[in-house]
Image 1 (cartoon, rainbow, N blue to C red):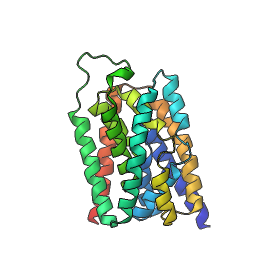
Image 2: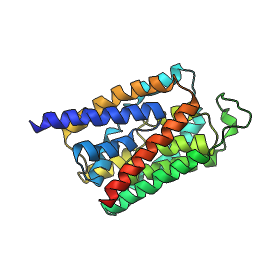
Image 3: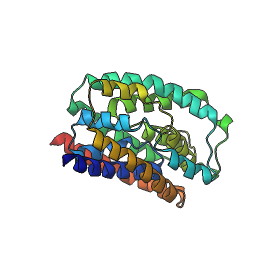
Image 4: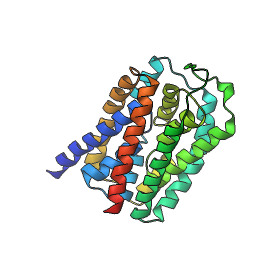
Length: 260
């Protein structure tokens, strides 16, 4: 009855990925890659393919609804520019990942996580202390396009969805309030911008079996809703510290995997 084990393990992977996604306002890819390796024993390419494929359905919709109900909003211009960059970067990242070894992917993932941690630690809050949402005219299109391209490339190359880059880029780079940045990132877990990258992995058979896929999807839907509900009950300072802690744990685990 290995399919039952795969289904239950998949639910566990999805729940953890969904909880971190909803709470930190990122796509669930970072948690999915790590826990697909840990709980399902998948090798790096398969874990990344599984992560991208299970992010195509709009499993983050429940999380977006929670953020929206709490008064957070996302200007359409931001979504458009980030999405345009994401599509271009995603295809390039997927093809690049297929051409390198597991070791290269693992170490790239570690370096990427460490860079995000550094950005979060160096971040300074807006000087005026205003926690209100940023006006749509305050952000130029080019930084949004570049954030999207980086998120897309990281999504395709490392199979993590790109949400971490969007959240950190907006919050740490462009000083967007934490909850608003997390909403923007979660919206991209609903819009299937990672289809080009997911298709590349799918076409090469780099994914786990269907029982695990079904379990992951179910876990994602439930976990994202629970995580988003929790996030909207705490301050942005708490979210900031938790994000640093969780990314640090992920970086340590992937360093261990790369060394062994």
